[in-house]
Length: 411
Image 1: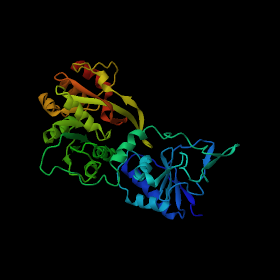
Image 2: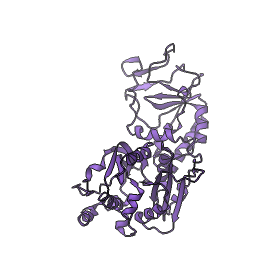
Image 3: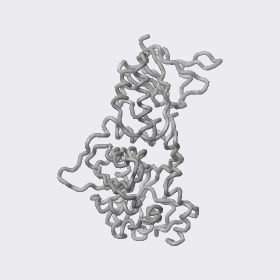
Image 4: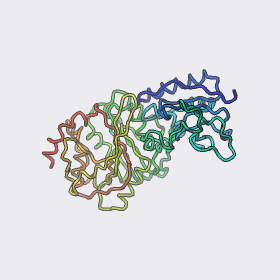
């Protein structure tokens, strides 16, 4: 059969680069052993009505150059030879293995066909049917409305599209004249090899290219330094410390190296929306008195099998009085996220304190916010610009019960 189709049976699991690499390899081996022209790749997603079965079109209802057919904007059918080549070339970082098919989708809309949409004028509808139990055949009865894919894709896809796996490793455009960047992104990481690559990829996806990224490896033992150098971009600089000193000390050291007039904090297990740096910078450009800018952040919970799962959206600025005092009454530690500092304002309050005790490793962000906003106002810009991932093993979550005590002595 000219358009015969077989099914890929491997399912995604995990969020580490090793998990995604293993999943990719299994898929490649399955595709190589198949003799079908097309492959159905469900990727473990629940896309269809549970009573329906989608049948592969006997006659392809679209352009001959189509290599991927989508259902509800989610890739489902792939031309085998094209997918094999794509899997062979792919080498990037994702928040979880389950997002792999979305990173492989062709950029050319002519190469994709949406099965959930009515066929183009003049095209034959043959094959676009499904069998519903007890109801015979009905055209399109298996398809969900457009946008039926998981809600978190709306926050993942922009990064994938802006920093494609097939161009994300290109060398950055450093200023040849040596002019400093507008924004310095600072990352202090300790044993974050599993998530650091995706965080860096989100910086590469920024719509504003005028940035530098400084990564400080705080005595990691898991290969985080190698992961920090995965992307070959001249705007990324890495600093390794043999002894674990705590985030406050590392950030203080990175601040001395930063050349931008604005400073952004990014944790090695979080990521930025593509427009984050531009919008935060604009907020500070337009408010000359402000020492810091913030926006909304997406809150995610990390699961071992599925990676980050979206929990909701938070505007952490509601926890602050105009004088910078925390007004939250709960026992948690609500950091202001995201945070872009005006470097001069940051230096005026002494930056991060050089302390290596427990309080230099937890609440250091709240401490700095507390001091800075007593000296200058806060600028706010709309939109979800930062994505914060919570997991039980993080030091901030393990010691969040100490927050009331910290607050008592810093009110």
